[in-house]
Image 1 (cartoon, protein in one colour):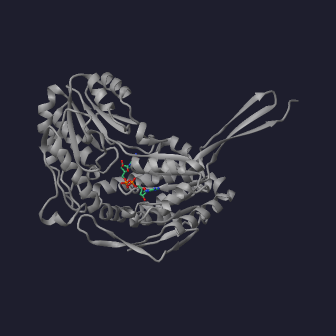
Image 2 (cartoon, rainbow, N blue to C red):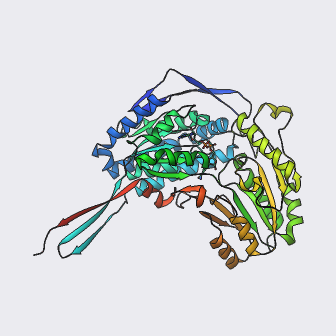
Image 3 (spheres, rainbow, N blue to C red):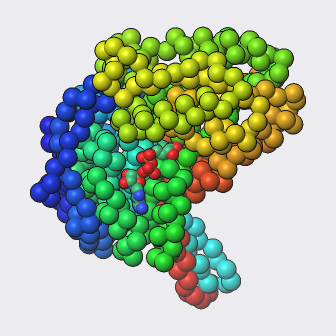
Length: 479
Ligand code: NAD
């Protein structure tokens, strides 16, 4: 299997190729064209030329039709794409199927919204009109991570296209084959104007850095770590481009004294090990009322201990490998340090032996700790580590949960609806789930408070990240 760049309406190569490996067994899946600055520059130029033509930026019905045709083409290849996603990313096939289905549904959602981007008109004085036009922002550059490469691509690309932007996409090298295969049915649509969507991959960062610094890029949408997001904000400052930054998280799950501990523990174990703990919203810290701490220790250790590791294509697998060996080693090191300094190790995970030994696997770890200032309560460790803490009352639960630089997501678990709502209001996060975790929808905006980012993706508000508001004034007088 080979994946090439797609720039200005043509598939192209850059002379250099890199390999994509299956992280579950180190088998080679294929090669992707490995570009850099030259491809980034050509892609931005092509997108800028395409944006200058009104046939795309001022044609919402065409944009809707393109999105609808892309969604229809994806539907006919859904299973093949899910298998490729599992092979390249490692996640369990059921998770890949869910992600592809969700991504297609999100394309359909934005296809509808493409035809509903209203501005407004005011008569500010007799015969004097202020027309507020919502216009596409221009060239949008999208830097997409590997952990959910279908849904995280679509939640930026679909609103950008619906709004009338032209785009340059830079996927993560770990999932370059999947992203090319997922985009191919869009890129080959006869209705899509040349240069409206461009794609290049690279193993380095020079192409991505060009997207950030280029004055020809009007919007930069980045999903990735807070460290890289901070760097991007600094490097983008001279151009004053619009930024959409979806960054790291450290989700707290607050479990009140009336919760059904056994049932909640099963859900939290799944929420902590989704994509092997490599999801920004994954459960990281469980805060439980002190009266239920002992029960929760036992139930969570049992639930996490029973998670079945394996190749994502095997039916029994609940958790696949991490994205690659480098990541496994970094995450494994931080988890080992956490186990060495926490109050109590309840389940010690690590690298499995035997047939899984060649893959980038790490089994789940559960620890308990009192000091929420510990590095493993504060730092985003992007893998299967869960920390258990106890609280005495709601005020302590809120203080502990808000003791974080992040503010992406949290959950509250109780049968007391009013109390759950009061806690949800007090938690400084972009998303709070009540009696669930990791529920994400095309229709519902997600984004971060504090160091978890800027702006919102999904939902109607995501369109706003890819638009500008223009005031056109005209004095037509009165009769
Ligand atoms: P990362 O920050 O290491 O890398 C992301 C991308 O940034 C890569 O493709 C890389 O090429 C690019 N990059 C690196 N340096 C750059 C630079 N100087 N300028 C421009 N681009 C540059 O993130 P990752 O490890 O790939 O992804 C995991 C992170 O993503 C986690 O922190 C996770 O929480 C976050 N994430 C957030 C969300 C969200 O919705 N908030 C969703 C998924 C993942």
